[in-house]
Length: 387
Length: 191
Image (tube, rainbow over all chains, first blue to last red; front, side, top):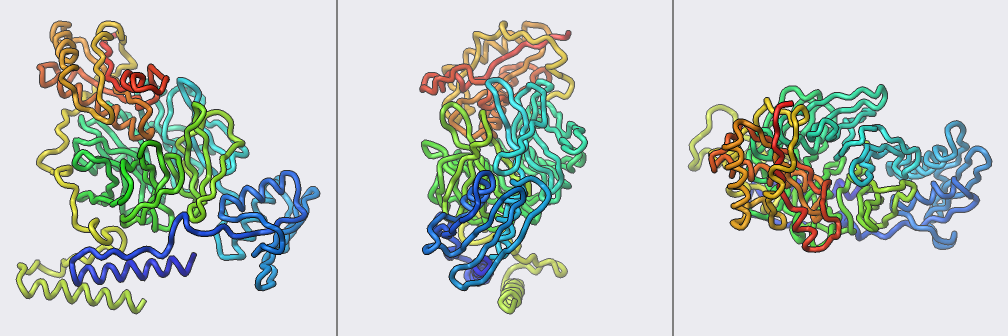
């Protein structure tokens, strides 16, 4: 992956140079092809019960598949009698990658840590210790839920009995921003999950929607209608210093940030057709982010490595799609909506409809492997992955 | 990083050439360099969304009043229940068949001696959640704009959107979708 990243940077620089020279569009394919990579075969032996379940789940949603030892690239073995012992080796070059005994924490934590150690040994960043936030709903109201990325250790952090929407993590803090109708109106709150304190940061007349904290947690983008139109704004995370970023007749929605904090990407309409745009946080004209090949894009989320934007396209049903962050040809991945990147810019959490409810599911973008977070019961949607 | 340096030199050289061969030279050393991320490749670089971000035509909205809080007022949902306005799929345009309802609401407001109005915008389920929340608000604002055009006092009208969270028909049929795409009028009077 690292080599590919370097290649795409080189390609981007090349495009920049040629464009300055010739002032005409030159299409160069990116080197990474989402949905086209083959899962990596691993063999598991010795694990059972909860440890085996966690290890299989973590590996599957990060692009691995399970085979016999003779077909595997990596061999993972160990035991979990009280504490977990894990070994990992590369069958091709015979090297030992991990050999470790884990103590402390729950068995789940130890199993997650073992998979993360294995991934680190092959130069990848694991997601075993990460969390998600989401909307967990009943018929007429909802609450905000938080859980490990695999659905374990779920906690409901609100108890307002009101409609809620769009939770998003604030930087790397244990804190969320979300919309709640608890006052009757759609207002935006920040919520510190360590102390439980909550603050209304946008209670303007009209609807206060879709809060998106900046990657460093210092600012928040949001969609407000106080001017009499539905436009994009940015403010400090405490709500002060509000600035309007767009002035359109359209219904701008679902902002997200570039990882360098310089751009906000959002969904809007251009000439009556839905499109993704991005606008500089410092102000200025918005630019289209092309999503060729799909229609009705919404709910963009910019990958933490800056390379990709994942979004929902609506073409009959709903599809999770990915496009280079500079815009270009979109790749359709799976059915679903409202995707959010994991910290490693590889796995995505999203919601899919079925049976009258939403189910959260995980998608490994390079291989298109998916797995429901079946541990979460009820209807759960609008996931946000803590980074 | 050799390539990077080369591109930088190339860009600076070209910008300089441009200054000499025709364009009016900008004061000082302000020639902007292209953003390394972002303004990117192909058709995304120079195309502003046409007609959408015209600063001379900013949204056309009339600011919402800040002194009306529906949660602190009596809400009468019956008075104008017969005049709920329905919308076409993915649209906030008021159809001519619905115009009579808006006119009835405008008349009610003018004759009701100062009562305020809350407009609630709703959507069907064929759209993503936050997209629908924005669309529902746009529907409510479109109705407010039309009422103002018909002579109603905009400083008495507030809006809110429920997106697709308050559907009245969950049958997922065409007729069900049509019932859900609506703007409801709630009369507000002081408590």
